Image (cartoon, rainbow, N blue to C red; front, side, top):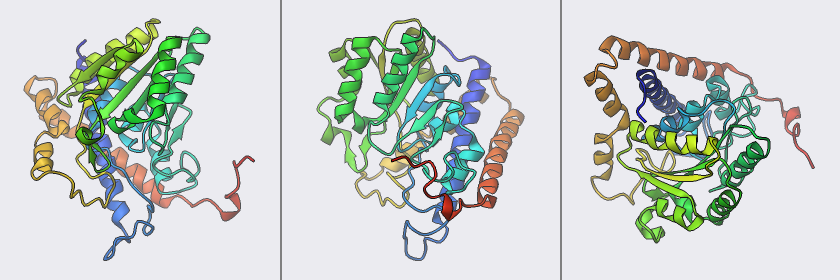
Amino acid sequence: MTPTRPQFLWMYETMVKSRAFEERIATAYFEGKSPVFNMANGPIPGEMHLSNGQEPCAVGVCAHLDAADFVTATHRPHHIAIAKGVDLDAMAAEIFGKKTGLSGGRGGHMHLFDARVNFACSGIIAQGMGPAVGAATAFKLRGEKRVAVAFIGEGAANQGAFHESLNLAAVWQAPVVFVIEDNGWGISVSKAQSTAVPHNDSRAAAYGMLGHRVTGNDPAAIFAVAGDAIARARAGGGPSLIEIETSRLAGHFIGDAEGYRPAGEKDALFARDPIPALRGRLLAEGMMSEAEDLALVKRAESAVEQAIAKARAAPFPAAAEAFDHVFA
């Protein structure tokens, strides 16, 4: 399965938009946090986890989904949210804690929810896997041709929820695809130091499902494997597990000194940045001209600038609303 030209261009533009969004968020995040870094200060307090470098995982999978399909993501969710079609203006406002945000400013960047496109994420490791299996089982019971996708990091494959979710998905033959974004690091612990098997796709066999590994952080290769898995799930063929070799170009969170990385690792990762790589391929193969590239980048950056400006201008929720939507 090879992407069409429109699909290639959509993947590239979405990756550019995601990277531009995170760069603008990072700039805003550092406001008020100097000369002494304090994550409680500034317009965006708290932790911030960037997904730059992992954009291919999101676009290669979400190119096969529509608004009716269900997606759960991790604490590093922006690239997946953007690829799934989450409202960019409302997402930016949520990150800034504003009333116009997806959850009225209550959730922040690790708790983005958009029912319009069936997207959710969580700061709890592997938390989204169970809900994804539940959604997929509901689709099957209702006879709907919808699928669920659960994105996790490679560290989450060592959580109990991972094994419980794979087991139930296989028992029930639920139309769900589990996607592991393997960036090699669980916070500051390398995969080799924490996981007994080198590749988590091998764990699929223990639950009677197909497992796949995609190397190279290549959106076209991810597109091909994800397309087969999602089509199989829609057709009643049950769950699949995909592990994608990807790159975390930033630290675990903004402010992470990354002293645990071997010398030269970051330089090597940036040399393989997937966005310039895809740009080069599209230009070389005649799928995009220089003028089209400029227009595409301008369009993506304009959408981001608009979202950030709206978020900054939006009001904060009133103090009296603090207990709204709280159920006891």
